[in-house]
Every structure is written in C-alpha cells, then in structure tokens.
Length: 206
Image 1 (cartoon, rainbow, N blue to C red):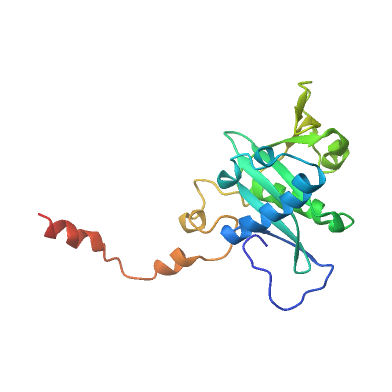
Image 2 (cartoon, helix red, strand yellow):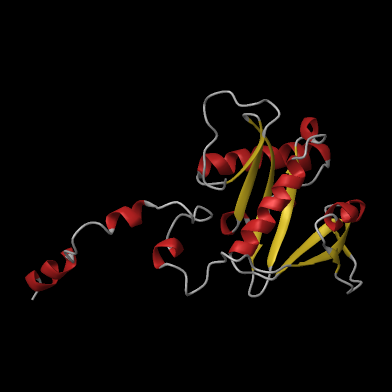
C-alpha cells in the first residue's frame, strides 16, 4: 500500500488507495490539495499553512480512482507521533478517503513502534477523531490558530506485532520508508561479493 504507485490502467473510479509521498512531484500534489482546502476554502494565510515542517514529515496521499483526493502529514517526536494537516478536496468528502488516510497513518505509526498519537483537532471534528479511539487530552489548554479553535487529542495504541525494532532484520530497517515488506535495492546488492572498494584507495594514498 505505502510504496506503490497508482497504475496507469483505469481502476474502479470509486476505489480508494493510500500511499506515502516519495518524491518532489508527490509533495507538489500535497501542496495542491492543501492549498485547495486550507488556502482557498478556509482562507488560511500561506505562511501559516506551509509552516516549515513539510520537509521533515511523512506525507500520505489518498486517491479516489486515479485522482488525488486528500492528504495527511505525520511528524515524529521522542515518544509520540503527531498526525496533522488532514485535507480532503470538497468533491471527495462523501467518500471514505479521510477515514482511510487516518487509518493508514495509524497503522504506519504502529509499525514504527510508537504507543501514542497526538493531534490538534478543530473543535467541530473532535467526534471524527473519536471514531479512531482518540480522546481529548484533558489539559484544557486553549489552542487557536489560523482563525479556528482546536482541541488536543490523544490516541493510545499498541505497536503492531511486526513493529520495527533493533531486533528486526537489518535489511528491513534500510528499506524505503513504509515499504518494509518488499525487498529493496540494497537487499539485491547483498548478493554481490564484498569488495570494499575504498580499501584500495586507502592503500594508494599511503
């Protein structure tokens, strides 16, 4: 799911797929979706929406058929992950792409071994996040930004049975982010004989 590109053949126009952003083109899709939702619909200032955190986060893109319909961002801290910037284009809000984006992010965070997910939900969307088991954090701290009032939410989870740890296969750990179950290019390189090419350079420099 996470690392697969959308096929060129036409899928079911209602089929929902989710994947991780992989390259600058994907970040352009994320930017376009969030601009349509937050800048155009909610009149959010550009510098508040694009806050300097996009290059240090994981981004999920949700498709309905072949059309990019929504996105979501995840950032990581010491003992929790923060799920944020969920945006769905208005014509796809009757689909379940928002639910599938959140569920994909929760599964991803579990796979990375975290036990807590923190979020800041617009007050009107607290019930949406409660659907996944999130609860108000209880600090009663008032949060307002970009002209909306927010509630701090916390979802406590158990890492998945296949969570990546220091005991995981080292080749799994170095595979592309979110694509841990499929052998990567470095798995294939392990089939070559060890040559240590820099060793000869070191001898030549003596």
